[in-house]
Image (cartoon, rainbow, N blue to C red):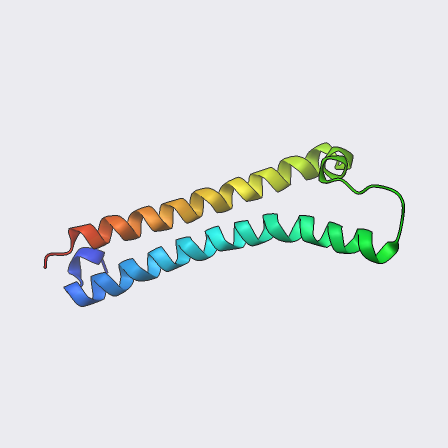
Length: 97
């Protein structure tokens, strides 16, 4: 079944679903990038260590393949979110009022 075979209400629902999926992926990326520093702050306050915890040090201590796979997954998620949103908006714009 093609999207062009659907009626306007179904196209609109499908387009809104695509946009919601894309926004959810972006929210997941933002949540991931915000939780990491927050967990480091909580870890530093609970342990009462005088050693400084730095995101730069943690990223520097990651092995090469781990760092590359982390960036690859983050990039794939970003482009997937962008693709879903772009297709949803494009489909919404093609609906005849």
